[in-house]
Image 1 (cartoon, helix red, strand yellow):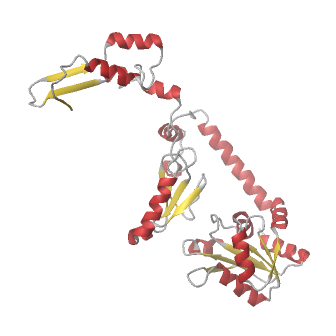
Image 2 (image 1 turned 120 degrees about the horizontal axis):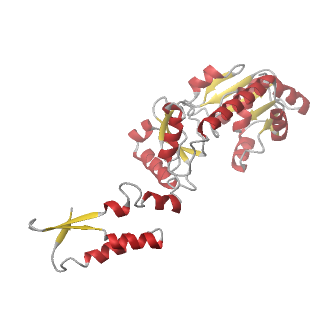
Length: 330
């Protein structure tokens, strides 16, 4: 892929001296290195290309990025300072930026902090990405073949329900357990930069929360906020080299499947196994109670029980005990 050259051609056509790529898709197009959200900055000038990232990704970027100078962003030398160094080094007067993705706050920070004119470039960059070269086409075709093979392998096993069934279905299809990292309600160790199948948030690393109560509190608050099966995001936390990926919570069971889980036909279901044992405080008298078979048959005739019926039935049976006598449940 010669995407840096494609971008330089665009710069010459648009009368720009450089472009700063802050949007994730544009950074990946230019450098071929995946990094989430705002975790990276690619800069292309007529003479050179640069890729800046933080300490989490610097080693991987140095190995993966070709045709660009890779440098570390750190305290006292942030993206804005690194970008100004490029501007000074190459005499940049007009710099393109990701106007389609940059926030107003970031734009104002760049406009006030850089000694050049910022020019919108999202439209031109999108047009570049729309034209696929032979290597990209081959990658798309390979990805489609993998998708088709995976779908064919698991389509017979897919069922709505809890995550354990999904895992079992995929294991049965021959998927190695180490590759099953995207099941809701589960955690997995993933390599950097922590690829994830869901929208995600990143919390302070294990090392940070181990050393700082404030970092621990921030991480705990994020985990609390995202603990919702419908709107919760996945959570990534760096543990040394790998990441801990906590997928979003599993969806609750639908009514039909929940009823099936507690029906009599399943061993250990509600009706077949419910037993309570009561002991006097002196431990001498033992009382056992099981669900009334006649009531169970009536429930079956009426249809699936509601969520409240087990409690009502238990209260009715308790009336046969001697009230005024102290009991404890074991």
